Length: 94
Image 1 (tube, rainbow, N blue to C red):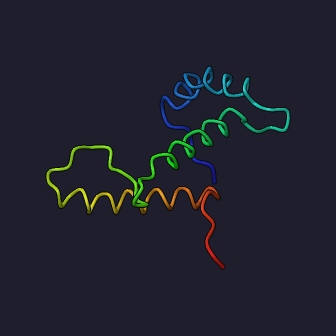
Image 2 (image 1 turned 90 degrees about the vertical axis):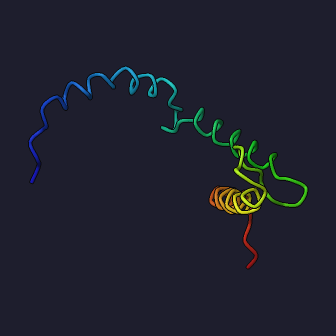
C-alpha cells in the first residue's frame, strides 16, 4: 500500500529537478554516466598512488601521538585495500 506524500515532499523534488536534468545531460547513449566513471577511475588512481613504500597508506590528519599513527595507518590501509579490491584494482589469489 502506498503511503500518502509528506507535506513539502513535492517541493523538495521540484527543487532537485534541475540537478536531475543536468545529470541527464551527461548521460551516455547506452544510458550510463561516463563522467562519473571517469571520476571514480581518477579517485582510484589517486588512492593507488598514495600507497607508501612499506605497503601501507597514510592518514590524512594529524594524530595525537606516535602510537596513533601506527594504529590509524593500519585502518587506512585496510580501507584502501577494501576499496581497491571492490573495484577490481586488487585481485585476490585463488
